[in-house]
Image (tube, rainbow, N blue to C red; front, side, top):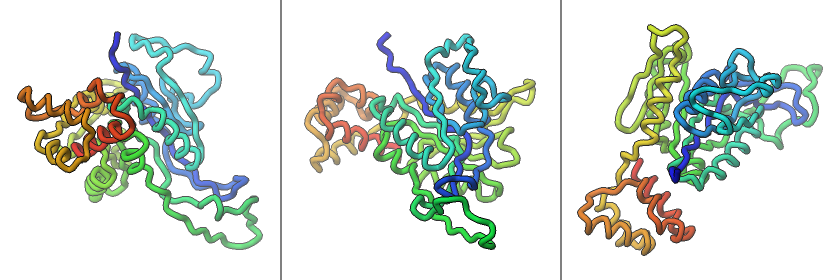
Length: 315
């Protein structure tokens, strides 16, 4: 019907950190994968195509009580959402697999522009053992106490936002056990990593409520206590899809003029903005920039400029 399809990458479950190259022992991140699996169901019902990047053995969409069961592949899931062909599941176990697959997905979705979304619910390790520092074989207990020095995992959120998929709508998650620092950490992540949203959740209450942190304020979302079996993911995904579909972020004409004078915009995109200004517009949706017919003809520089404009707007 000519309407661009919305695609969301949902990450789910926790990553492991191997301690040996031929891994026997590893450090694991706590996560059942329920949030990612349940959210995937609601994204599908909302009409999204979903790339489900999940930890092996964790909860699966529509069958959270039977995680990762090969028998489930024999069944066809049917509902009013007509999800056939709209769900791609990709498994990971280690932090290395997760980062590599996420990069591949992001680069593949880059051409979707603002029709792409990343819902990063996976519990990603903060520390790891670099591959070159690992023991090749199983660490022997006869050697005595084990001392391990862990390095910080390279932060992929800034790279995702800036390089891999600069125009995608990005939601990250922040889990803490201390409510006193939860919102501070979430706001820090929002600004530091240039996220559109950060979903803040506290360990004890994570199934009951979450706080969606945005540059325009915070929204507390709770599950419907009056409905048996209701979960917090349904209203959360409803909030996310409304925000992701609504192109409220506007590029002010004066900002465009500044960029044009600095010679940072190509003539085709600049001419389009000039046309809008002469038509009386005082602001232009970044989504309409992407839909501008000259976008594909603008070349690599022009496409990079669109990403630059979009990133400038949400900062």
